[in-house]
Length: 311
Image (cartoon, rainbow, N blue to C red):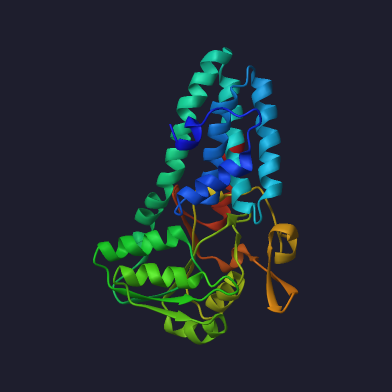
């Protein structure tokens, strides 16, 4: 039982505060896993007396979480997947008390499998890194970092170019982690991707979400990197957990939910400029997706979503 679960039950459960606490307590936890963890705690703390009450409780709290957290795309994927998991289990049980016990034990197992997916992906992606590779990565992705660290532990010799990824400068976090583990790494400005693409052998990026088409929603600049990689005939791999597969079908960055896809910062006094936080890279620019359920083509994503939601 987690620290959050050990607290005395409040009159009203604050799903957003619980979610933020999980992220605060474990910097390596991803948004969808934190969302799933929070919903597991919600079920444990509130103890709904019927299946209908449980679904109403989940629907209400999922809506609150999605609307109160900026950039909720990957969070939404985790919430939707967990709701589907609960609904499936409810349908399999006629006895509500037995169903509750099953949900309590399997909800925790669901979380543990989601957490373990990062390491499974690293194992699946290891074959894509060879000695003497020069690899370009964009921004910061826990799962991409885990893949590169595993390759280094396996004594594969490679070097990494990483974009600084403005405006949040998250590429610096990637560089610091890689350097701390002895991996040769160079940070480049975002505008230098065109210069760098001829020098690299392949590109790895993470994902905020993977759309039904197999296209990827990720940090701003991903589309630029993918377009240049395509033009230079360099493989472009998306490294992502299957719990980030989302039932969305954007055709362009303009189709992303605007209220969660911008970042505001001060440039001069009190003036605030809003810049895009996310962009969308279409499936035709992606070589393959390296996931915890295997290496997929972009068309394979829709097949997996059908299995998750309709099997």
